[in-house]
Image 1 (cartoon, helix red, strand yellow):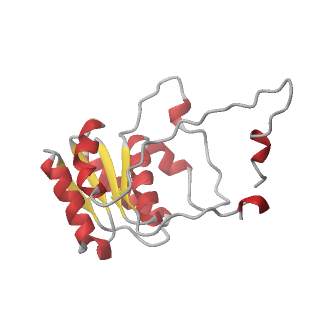
Image 2 (image 1 turned 30 degrees about the vertical axis):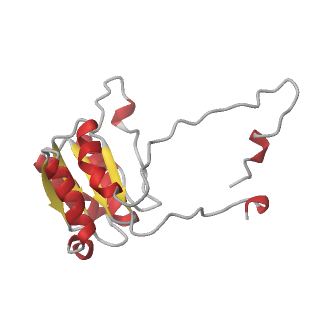
Length: 176
């Protein structure tokens, strides 16, 4: 990955301004209590709540579930997420998602939970993808049906909690 500081350097005759639209992110004490209202604002009514067996017994999952149900949303928990997800675990989650007919997805956990939630949403929305792609780096991926002329948006994902903060994988020397 190369350094991005050149974007900020003013060069005569060159554009020096760019913008990036990012998702709204809530931080702080009580943020999990807002999950229900935020999910409702995104148009969710039937929510798949993804977590793992260990986290399911912790207060954070109960708090998010309570917030979702308190907002009048139907919530079903999927706690079969595996650490370092595989094709099989993604497909099992996708089967749960497809059979549940969810219109929204929420994850409470770390990277494996979030990745499984996103894969389940994608595979349930576009079943053909699961037979043409793989988590193996050598797998040959076909073009995503979402890029065809017929666009059918996937239900909105939400990830209100992570078990650990993300850290950048590489930085340039001035950023260290």
